[in-house]
Length: 89
Image 1 (cartoon, rainbow, N blue to C red):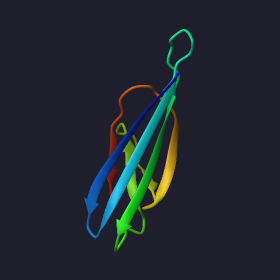
Image 2 (image 1 turned 180 degrees about the vertical axis):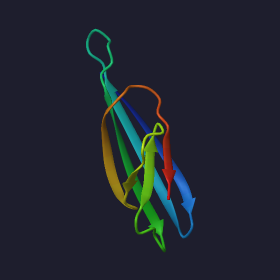
Image 3 (image 1 turned 135 degrees about the vertical axis):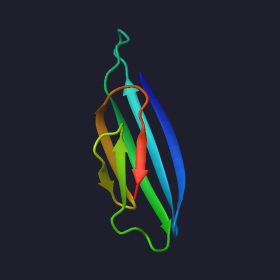
Image 4 (image 1 turned 90 degrees about the vertical axis):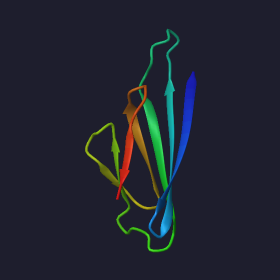
């Protein structure tokens, strides 16, 4: 069974607006055991004077990775459960 969860976060930034939409999805086997899930992140930035190198994203305190100002990334094999996503410039 698929259990989707969608979250959207709006952040005001100097000269623009960052919209970071995240979607997670996991499934269970017939016996009820959980499998790994997936997190889809989409950064959409509007306004003027956009940051040319995008944003740094960190999941659960791990090393951050860069996402362009208008881009999408999919994180696979994510453990089922709550996660902390940090966004920095």
